[in-house]
Length: 126
Length: 126
DNA sequence: CTTTATCTACGAATATTTTCGTAGATGCTT
DNA sequence: AAGCATCTACGAAAATATTCGTAGATAAAG
Image (cartoon, rainbow over all chains, first blue to last red; front, side, top):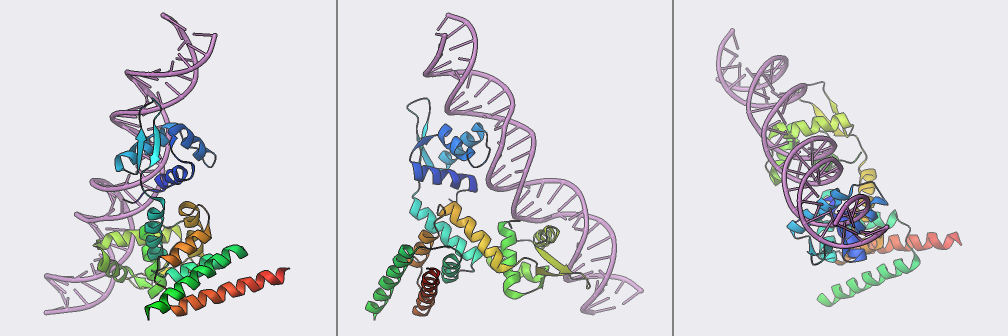
């Protein structure tokens, strides 16, 4: 079940800030762009029907939580994105992402460490 | 001007195989999924109106070419994707892409070289 | 030359996503 | 308690994207 653009925007907010009522999500979105309250409400209701969120309806103001895993969703969307935009080549995506973003030394170190671990794992296969 | 999913699919084919008539593109798409000829025709006509393609109409069978740059398009889509799906962190995308894809030694070497070049560039700034 | 195949153009139907107005219920303020 | 604010539910409009049927023109085949 692939979230739409608006749904993903809301999921990101729920992942980052935890369970929230519609009002708060709508205000967060409105810091970026103008959207009516009932629009956000409707989308979140649909998300609930699709199982993307769950909600606590004990109080009048319902509180929504993400119901799909952030890492899993990222990885699904990433592999689809690699296929559609980078013709399936994860490496050209990595090269482009590294090349066009300012990356700190600490982050480069982290990536180097990951590469080392991958190389070691490769050698152990032999 | 952001291409839709169908438009991007066609652009990829034009980038990869060069200028093509509608018939050929449609047949390529149909190897993956079933789409009627006039559907593909219509989308390519719209792409032309949007400036995503240009076409040679000298012969009856029009030949379409991509009219936007592949690298530029990739980088635009990538940075948007990083924002919407990885909350703006290119590094977490890189880590995830490396982590979840089988990457050959040659490719790892290429990435390491890029990192070295980036580190050198960083040192020269001082 | 006639028939058949292929192509473009056009318009409209369908599907999907986003938008919001309105109504009715509940809570809050005075 | 009355009036105002806030919430959900619902339905339908608007915006966007995809789908394809049909008509008319051109080319190819017989």
